[in-house]
Structures are given as structure tokens and as C-alpha cells.
Length: 114
Image 1 (cartoon, rainbow, N blue to C red):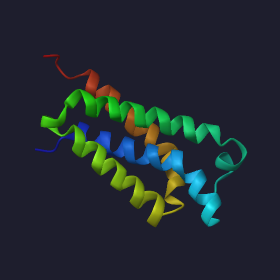
Image 2: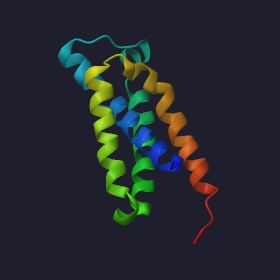
Image 3: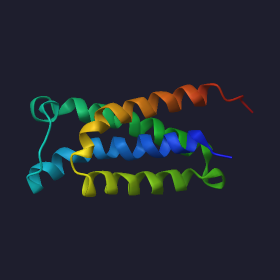
Image 4: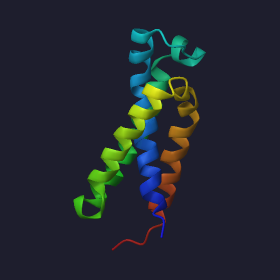
């Protein structure tokens, strides 16, 4: 069985972290940046923080016995891969991070409360 909320939390955390850190690494390594990241750098950071906060909130709610730390670990690994190896893949994170965060919230809201 596939845990879709787990995957969405990892994706939201990884892509959000990639958005937050991309400007720093892009300027330092002279990687290309999109117009939004050059002209309005606060927008990608806010989108990234939104995605990260929801993913971390979900991971904390799950706890360690249900994979909360694994979400954080895999999210950080995804961010390292996404930013470090794909570089401009971070541009598509502008769309993917908020979508993953919203889908995570929607899926989490439909879970029956214990």
C-alpha cells in the first residue's frame, strides 16, 4: 500500500526547501535564475516556507513511530538532489511545492480523527 500523504509531505518539504535555498546557491555558483527569483526573491521563499511548514507540521503530527523523522530525512535528501543536481529544476518547484502542500493539507483534512 502506498502512503500518499507521506509522499506528499516529502515532496512538499523537499521542493519547499529547494525554493528557500536556491537563491543562495544560484548566486554563489552563478546558476541561472528565473525572473521571479531575480525580481521578487521573497515570493519563492514564502512559497517554500508555506510548503516546509505544512510538511513539518504533518511529520510532527505523525510522530517518530509512524515515519515523521523519515519524512524530514527524505525531504532534505530530495532538496539536496533537486537543488544540487538538477539546478534549474528548482524553477518548477515554484509550482510543485505549493501544489504538494495544498494536496497534503486536503488529504490530511479528510483523514478520520482518532
